[in-house]
Length: 405
Image 1 (cartoon, rainbow, N blue to C red):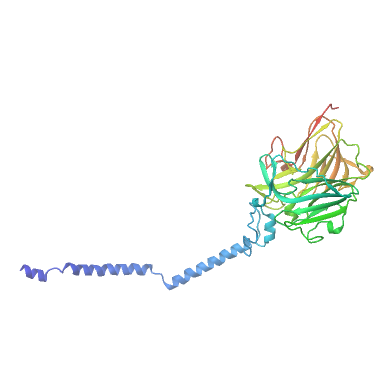
Image 2 (image 1 turned 60 degrees about the vertical axis):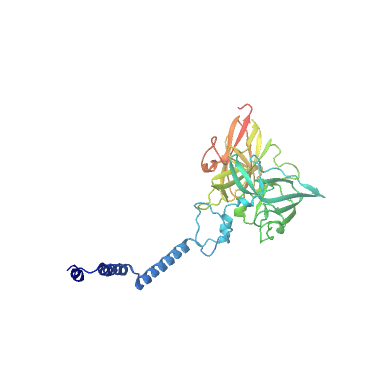
């Protein structure tokens, strides 16, 4: 009986297992079918991916020039906020880019001053000057360091002082990472020595020297500056004063002191120095007189009754500065190196100094005290939008001692 029950009872365990296995297999097949990728699905996803890629490329191409790469722009670092249109060429990006710290060949001491007089050597009756263009570090404030393009390791470059009739020879050696030239702004010179690159001369390539030679036939306030990549090089400091005395004595013999004022704008962001330009993202946030921002600008010291000859030079590359002197008006005695006849002279207390312009004015110290000489665009008298010790940027103090009226 027991044996018979075993032969006609429930199926063996393996049979149940087999049936159970068939049931599980059916369930798995259903799940596999549910998640199996079909050919139409693959095609749809592929088409959507291609369309997304095309849309991304079109969007990028509408805002950026995809035809240039990092090598084309020498790994340029652009200023934050600068507008970069899709048709902007690589050459423009290179000129607007930050100075590469790896190009620095000299670190000027923090207290170094620019516009230092340079003495020529004589070769026969020719006055010879040696100028060298290079990338340096330059402090416009004790705490604010710029990467600058400089002549002879200073910003502005050395002051060249001549006398009408001098025969001069100027050797310019280029240690910059790009070509350069120098232009003698306002001077009458032989055309081949005027300075515009690729117009009157071949650019001075890195490592090369070019010699300018001419006879000075004018007198007055002039200056020299780069005329190759000028929007970059001059904005980074490649300029200097050129003062020419008349052959028959001083044009203004009754002055007690002479002051040269050279103006410049700077753009510094997060430790990078960019050439300041009048465009979005390139507007300046620092301003200097003779390479320094207030309160590190020079203090002019005078006595009551002193007459100061102030030479304003528009070495600034792209902005106008209405220069104002406190303590009374001044008299304009020369413009762009040309004397104003006595009968045509007039008084002002503010004069707009545009790029390239020069104004010679005589200011009389009438009362004792501290009198400001400054730009009257108020933003230009700040340091990164902040006033220090009452001002900043394009500000100097004329400190007058003695008895007043």
